[in-house]
Length: 494
Image (tube, rainbow, N blue to C red):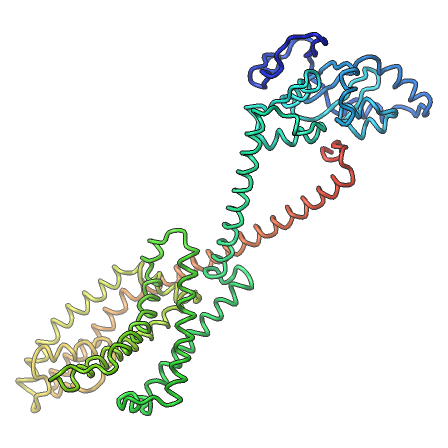
């Protein structure tokens, strides 16, 4: 067993470590593994000896030394060594006068052999023994600084007793812990922001944010529709602005301010800024928001300007640019794809079915190139009226006929021409049916996948929140238990 040296020993305890001590790696023959709890169970089964008999047995067993068993390794320690450290855990153990007091400090106790059991780290305990015996306390290089601090707190050794060379490690650990706590708070805020703007089902803030976004998109669409009324167009052409026009401008400003704020929050919370700018929906947001600011700049620069010798041509061009830019506001409707599972499914289907759409376009082009010249020749030779003036004009008829739209602006008059039209209608139905079937199955599969993914995300988040709450409740109960029973650790192991 590992014994402390005598009072006049010259042993260098500062070089003691868990890795370098050969007695720890290869225990001597005197050290033996201890079964924690066996002696305590034996003591529980023993008959009650009475308080007088118990005190007599304790006083006879506790002689000049004690056997400390830490983590299965036994150490013989003289009681005189602990007289200078009455506030430490082992010093309190020396002052105990009953079995219950002993069990409040250690995990188990063998009355017969006067052996005290502690279920702690034996590597750190050797450093504690070095301090109790030689007064030198140094941290272990192989051990985490936070774990070593917990061991010092458990054994009742003040951290101020550390040598000056080891205090720097503790200070670095404290600063690193503070930096990590600050970083954790930032990450927590970014995670909450990400849940709010990207995951509507994550909680109440996400739902409110999504509802506001949909509300402003709806208001923008209604506002754009009202701005195209004849009365508004007349005021715009006359260069006037009534109260209704001013109200429309105020509503548009509020909506654009919200969309700008939403775009900024999405940009801040995204981990990859470049990938964020490349996303199609984010590009649509930029194209929809920029026209408002461009319109303000153009309006401010075009007031009072008029090119010499050009009449109203410059102002007409400016007005055309402004009308085109304002028409781009309709792209706000595409923002609904962020909160609609159906629109997300439509976009995913379009990306997955590019080959099917290519085949559909190819079939239509081949059929149009076949039926348009044929009908043009038949109608020019046999029809009384010439409605098909050229083959390119007949392309339009072929498209609306094969897609079964049939506007009726160009109609074949001759019987052979009507037969050709009937053939083109039947061909269009068959050619449209082949790729559309595959596209429909892809749409159904994509919808199911997105629905399942959404459910998995909700389940993972619910499980994470429940686990966090249970962990917080467990730590709170553990803290309350430690406050009520600050020393005894056998209850925690049980």
